[in-house]
Amino acid sequence: MAVPWLGYDRKILAAHMKKHYLYYVDPEYKTAFCSVCGPTDIFVAKSQTEGKPRVFCLSRVQKSKETQKRRISEKRRLQPDWKPRHSLTKIDTEKMTGICAVCGPTVIQKHTQRGVTRYICATKVRPYGRRYRRLHYTPRTLSPSAHTLSSIDEDKKTAVCSQCGPVEIYVWQGKRKISRRCSNARIRRGSPAEQIRREANTRLINGYKSKHGCKRCGYNRNPDRLYLHVWNSHNKDPKIERLLKLTRDRLIQELEKSDVLCAICRSLLHENFRIDRLSSEIPIQFSQL
Image (cartoon, rainbow, N blue to C red; front, side, top):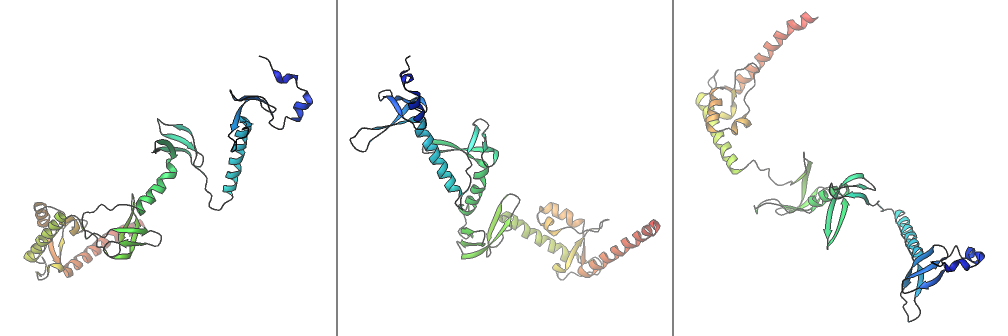
């Protein structure tokens, strides 16, 4: 292959080395000889007028675009609201992993929009998604009397309730999520079936207390002033909340194991138990001295 530019004077080539001068331009194959790059492809710019189109070295055009992008990027970084981009490299579509420019090794997510598929950093998207879902969620309730919240502002703790209008809300962090509730809403105590069981168990316990009365003094007028007591080494009474959740047969078995005491007899019993426990610990403490 003949090299036509070797016949040029070296001084002329040295003078043209800093600028991309084109020689032997072939518009059909879009090739030419550049004074800087040597044999290269060319870029033909469309002319706005009917004049001759302008021809540029393709390497020069690419470098100018990179320089322009670098200048725009540096200009954006000087702005106060600038944030670094989470650009990804070494993307593995099978394991859905990659390396983020900000987060480092991370999990990626696939997003397809208008037929274009792209991958984004999951570490960046997840906090934004959680906050967006909290502020723009669709309530899943079937009751028209429910206090449904909208226009939620977690910082000021305000929202718009479907029943109360603009109202203050309670915000607290649970084990898995952040919960919000209208300050005028009542806390629901279980399902309707659980409420019926609690009411039936409450009547059964109050009837048992009034029927047997206090074991020591016989008081049985007010069941709210009577308490259940189990004789054991720990001297701990059964919890009413646990008894209200039991079935009827299981509750009757627990009541048969318990005795009924009034408030005064119960306090005296606990006081005597505390004194007996302290008296049993005093010899041990003196023996250790």
